Length: 232
Image (cartoon, rainbow, N blue to C red; front, side, top):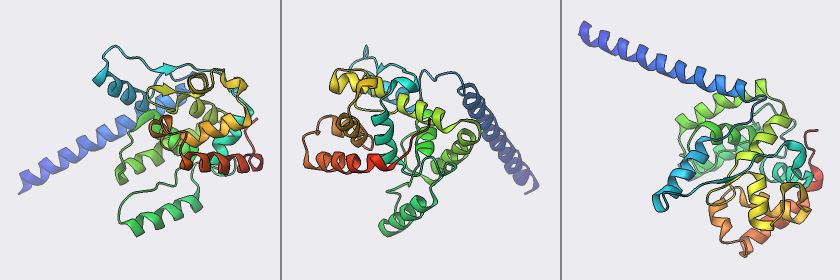
């Protein structure tokens, strides 16, 4: 029995060591990206692998652009659509989380996350799209790392440059050129609302932008855009 407990104890220590090593690796990247731009993300790598299943030579469409070269309309639209209290919270929207918990309990499974832009950024950079309590816990840890070391401006800049906007399309610049044949700096209010409307399910909306559901989302976002503030 003593040998069994000793083996379990050693296994637990190894798992703890691996967990801590992963946290250190993540935090080192978070610190590096304070003033260095990420060239890839966990979601981008997964997207490329998905493309390679059909076309081994496929490449992602992604081009980094600095914060000041992204339309103010897109910044407003994304905040209005994804996280209206972005400038006020410290990474977690308690009200949004409470609503998500109520919805999950009602459904009996994880169907909503109540995620802020900071949480979504943490997930996009380091994690998978799988829904689980373990992944949400890791997401929370990374969110705290990001919120305590990055400015809100940097969080929004990185978010706008790495999120998915269609099959193999990542970042505002690639999305703007794909859907509107123009740089992200030139997006109009309506075009920005359309891009923001795609964020929850970009690969579906890429081929269903003529749907009534999409039109309702665009209209709702457009009406809220003037109510939000963006980082300077």
